[in-house]
Amino acid sequence: MLPVTLLPPVLFVTITVGTTAAFLAWRERPEPGSVPLVAMLAGQCWWSAFLIFQLQATTLDSKLLWMNLSWVGVVVIPVAWFLFALEYTGHDQYVRLRYVAVLSVVPLLTVLLAVTSRSHDLLYVESTLVRRNGVATLFRTAGPWFWVITAYTYLLGLLGSIPLLGLVRSDSLPFRGQSIALLVGTLAPWASNALFVAGVVPVTGLDPTPIAFAVSGVAYLGALTRFRLLGTNPSPNRRARRLVFRRMQEAAVVVDSHDYVVDVNESAAATLGVAPREILGRPAARFFPEYEELPEDGAATGYVTLDGDSRDALYDATVTRITDFRGRAIGRVITLHDVSEHIRQQQRLEVLNRVLRHNIRTETNLIAGYADLIAEDGGDPRAATVKRHASNIAEMGEKAREISDIFERGREPTEATPLAGLLREHVAAIREAYPEATVACDSVPEDAYVATVLDPVFSNLLENAAEHNPSDDPHVEVTVEVTDEWVSVAVVDDGPGIDEYERSVLERGTESPLIHGSGLGLWLVTWATGVAGGTVTFEANDPAGSVVTVRVPSLSPADGERSAGG
Image 1 (cartoon, rainbow, N blue to C red):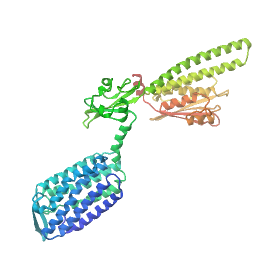
Image 2 (image 1 turned 60 degrees about the vertical axis):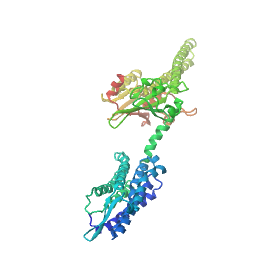
Image 3 (image 1 turned 60 degrees about the horizontal axis):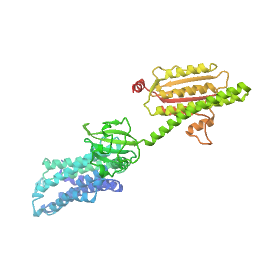
Image 4 (image 1 turned 45 degrees about the vertical axis):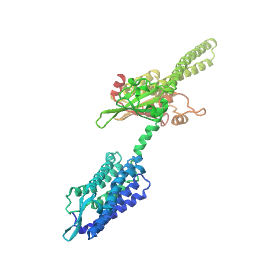
């Protein structure tokens, strides 16, 4: 413990540091927590200043005066700390005038009892001067109200520290640093005061708490400057999470462990056609016809209908279990996504796809048949042109079917297949279909796996490279690069190449009546690669031809086994 004669200079330093921190906090108004933090720092400076006056006083009456007035700063600190913690952590709905008034009742009574302490024994029973080494200090015997305000002070200190403790493990470094600095700045004076109350302070009657405010000031300065306290704070987090729940488009219903509704968002109330007060506290099964069929956790296997929904609607339901810190289930969140339009659109596309596939195939077969008859009867050379275009239409219909299948498979779990077998099969098919073409392929590791949806990608790329090369000796080369995370397959040819205009349409990602590609083959390649989670790049080959590179995630054999097993 410092000698009593050295305490005033130390307290001056404490006041200087505290005032600097308060000034920095005041400049951050109206950031959450800035005003309560200024009030807390002002209370610390007030207490320190009046302790200096008390130490310099020589008579009992003068020491009592400064001691009693110092209670103004003493009682401000815990209230301001608690209000700061609430605002800083986003619980500002409790920082309202009526709540502040309630919190201030005990502190105001304490100040009133302090200034009238000569007429009662509630705050102090006895006050005496104690002289040691020529220095007089004030010794006071605590009364019953002293223990009331002490307990109240520690209670507010503890309640204010609890939300800050949750930020110590935050993923945000500034929030961790801020919360640790704040807790250190609060713990130091609280610990000093606890030692004083316990009677273990070496100097009789001297409360060292204001001296510990020097540690608080340094900690708060560090939080304000190093960790940008009030410049960035977590106060929006709690409200943002609540806002996301309230305003999310999907209907969300929270039920407790007894299956009673405890919360709903705006979408759920609108979907159910009820006001929140009509559903809260009621059994969830009353509003969900298939409630008992919902899983305890995870996605429902079928579609869900709702009571109160005036539409003929179907919903995907996902149940998320809520657990406490011991891992015990305390409730569930049921999220509902309206898939009615998606289902109807899917049904329309399926019907349209079946009709088009059947009709296109039938009509093109008829056209080709009549073209053959015309060629046989009259030898009209235009019959071959008609037949070729009919074949193109049939091929386009087949490409559309493949694209439709790709999108359907994109909604299913990823299925893995060996890359070596996939390329081997398509290279062999191209060599057989185009014997004049030279097709080379790198050796592929047998443990390289990719998404099965890439099957038509490699088929189309190899076929295009061989078919559209007018050379008498076309060359196609397949190069493969495999890493732990990615697989790159490049198809290189020496043909006429892909027109720059065609590549620009693919890079744009859409067509218009005036800007469109020549067919569906490259769209199939682009879309299927996207479904597999990869990308396609189109480049010119030197001196002629094109290089099409497909880069997709590398999968494990387990993906194929898991999907095959259902």
